[in-house]
Length: 212
Image 1: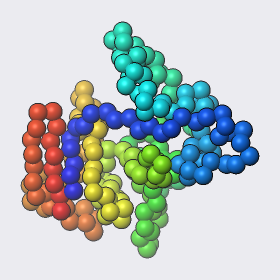
Image 2: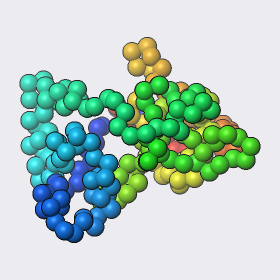
Image 3: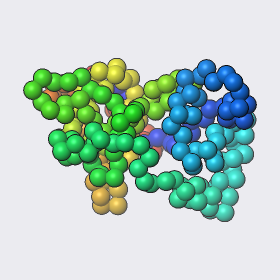
């Protein structure tokens, strides 16, 4: 299982939503597009997907003036609650969330297999993300807490995860952003999961770890 410590930002793009998709008597057949229409926010409506052919020019425009438009686009993201997050707010689950305002929406959360006798054992702060015309192609999750290591590795096992891309450092600006959820050497057991580190490749700006 390959787990880079740092990776460049990537953008997922789909075809642009055309007016014909909305006005047509026939609903779009692409399941990803259908779900996007069902769960789109006002911000998504005003900023539809970028066609692949225009993505390069779009990024260059955002980078102009010291990334000014990148900053403006980031600030335009609506931070408030868009959908329900009842499971994240359950008393048995609140301690599993690293931040009180970074939660898992109910409609797309990853549901773990229930462990008998353990309330809330199906919960992890993680949500499915669609890929290009593929539902649930990716999972976005928080930096694991020590008390959620076993849930994290159980999720990887249950979803048959092949690649983990870690988009944060363990510590940034003296703040703990993620606890080390992998063994430094040899093997570690997290709940019912034993993880063995078999290879480490140190590169210039990131590293690749292989787990078994």
